Length: 225
Image (cartoon, rainbow, N blue to C red; front, side, top):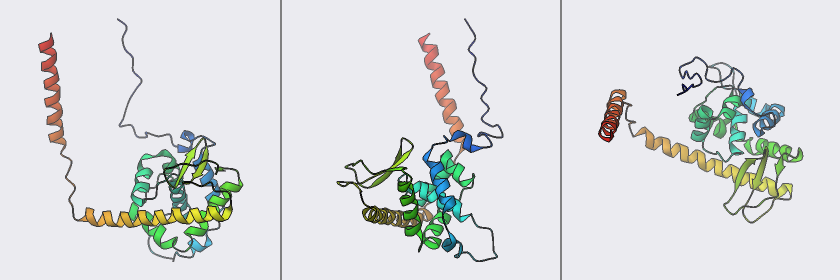
């Protein structure tokens, strides 16, 4: 019988990802479009909210990129954005492997972007539309959503097809309202979580359970022989 050969698997190796995460992202991927568009935005109003001194802050363009990319993929909660930064290679690439926590994202969104989020996000959406990167031709019955498919962002809304810029802007306002609701929910959940204690992970107990399962399986094999 031929010997089974497996590819080398070393989970504890120093680098699990290639040094350049961009190698894992297709050149035509929507995340690259968002990255380019935000790089071209005038964010002087956002920059004016920063004061000198103190500790260093996450770069506002990086924060804008992860927030706008999240909104275009129906991720409105700051907690969920933080989760994507730890698990999704697109977000990791946008952030340069930096992981602002949900409080930092929340503060940036509700504080520094408070007066500019509507204008900036609208500019991004309009720019993508003018570049032909948006499809506004499909309708769904499950409410307002923004989806990325076939390397294009598809904006779809219930019982209507967005044909005019004015209507598009109105829909963007509706999306940002959902974002505000998501932030409020994050804050409420945090208040609840602060009153609860997360049980500690007990490695020894887990190992005992695994040993018990392995022992049971071994007994079953012996009885079946």
